[in-house]
Image (cartoon, rainbow, N blue to C red; front, top):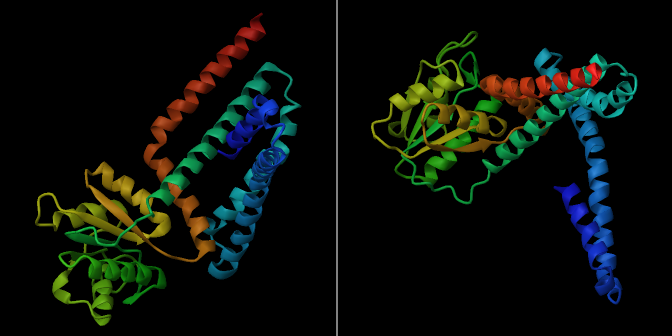
Length: 308
């Protein structure tokens, strides 16, 4: 968007240079905007790499060294390698096969980065709500694991968000969704319900769903507990998880909106990457088809050139 904006400013000044010649202040503003847009385009990848790398270190310090906690740092390293090192490798590929492989990998990287940008933008848009009162019939709070019988801070944030929306939707029922997993002494939903009751929520407004062990099952089993035929549904989960939860709900034909509970920024960045990987797992067939078609075109084109 910034690149296109810079191009628009450049061509505007070029096209109307004569008309603008007598208005130096307008030309100055347009040039300043052009320089700012170009500067942002050039600085953005650098800032992105630094942000993910620094926040990745914070995550490792606070949450420990685990494979899933390395995603932020790994993304920063791969992005740096793609922008700074990969172009130099392209200069070394002089044969037909080498240039074809280089082109295919380059396209795949650009395609995945574009998908990630669209996924992130869509995730942000689905977190924007102008009001809390949605005249909801049911508010589903998705579970995220407990320790023994204790609700974790991440899950507590989800419950608090659900309680906030429950007070804004007086006719809604609060569905706590989550079964019992390893290391848990009771179903997550029962611990969630107890937490909400301790905070003052009327237990008559709480429904517990105790069988699910995944987001997909959270939605499926919670929908079965609803008495209304076409209910208005709100889903509550952590902010980075909202968009994928909505995609899973759409697959099941569940019409709903999603609200996100806040969590720490360093954790959100890493989790967003994990959620994007989960999205790729859901839609890998169509993306593989796109990359495969482009790869076939590149290989055929290179073979034609080689045969000539």
